[in-house]
Length: 315
Image 1 (cartoon, helix red, strand yellow):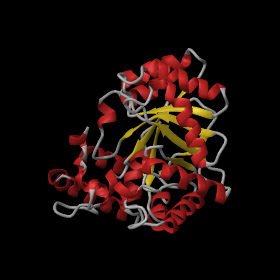
Image 2 (cartoon, rainbow, N blue to C red):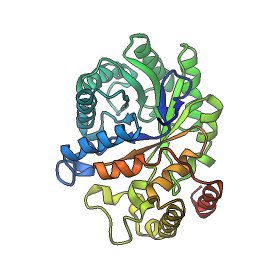
Image 3 (cartoon, helix red, strand yellow):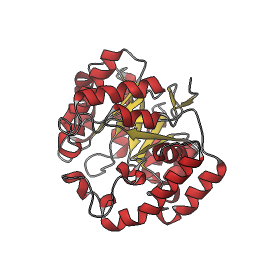
């Protein structure tokens, strides 16, 4: 069985690879119900669990709650010992920190569970609610037994420190900060977030670890996803053109590592960074099986160094 790591300073332990469930139930951005179906998602969930990935992350804004419903149904149906994470969205005009506990209860209802393992604030918006107020609401959720651990997402290093201090005053640890991090977006290494995670003992949960397929060479200038997803900046022609040599390097390194697919090389590059847990999305069982095959082996130091060198421009 894959060794587990602690999720920050909490009692939760997970394998060093998680699953992002944004596409599970989201029709507008990911085409759920068309490009992939509930059967595909079931296959993805089971392949992940069977391969050793037990941490599943969603959010109330993914598919307007549909992703939470799908993930909760899968977890209940399977009975597998999984770790479930979701996020509160501090939307403007929602009511600030006072809306967090009602939103949490809404997530619990949609997921059909009594307690969420990891509850996170999706982003910091200090005009809507102060970080101190949001962390106080998270601490209240822990005190009420509604969540086991709490984290943040898309917080800067300074925002993380403020969140950590506010939680510490209530005797609660900051489990994690979930940010975009991959070989084509290495900003956490230079903007202080990765250092802050290590300083505070929090895990860095890396979303978009495959740059939504760009790192796999799945897209090229003029060949991007349809709909709103294709309008994201990482599908801009100049970004795709610059990424192509990196995708080629991942394929080459994977071949040298025993015919490993590029997904596993990209994910293991992140797993080689202390304190980092990538969250890899999968829309079907085949994708999930390739992702979870990351567990059980590691990249050589030489391969990690070659990727580091090839992607310095994205730090």
